[in-house]
Length: 124
Image (tube, rainbow, N blue to C red; front, side, top):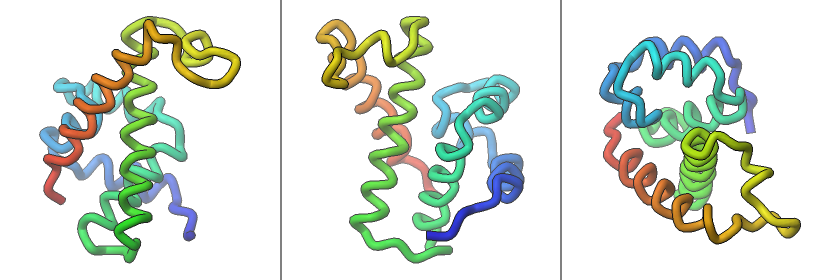
């Protein structure tokens, strides 16, 4: 798989309409969405870009690979939203087996579903 240059990814982000940025980030203020993007892990940015390129038909990914990439993106964004909501790191929300404590699992599931629905509504 080709490594996507971060400059390309950031240039793409800067060309997006605010409604698309909002669907990706869940943030409805452009400045705040741009700050979110700035601090997002490079690998997450690259995954979002790659998924968008596959959805737009600009790169070839199998449906299975595209779906796996989509699920990974949704999971990462749900983790970030959960950490932001509770003000603690993911590591503090999981047990020694890597599973969320019950207190956090239900909220993670809700956030995952919300983000999945939001991203499913993007038309590239």
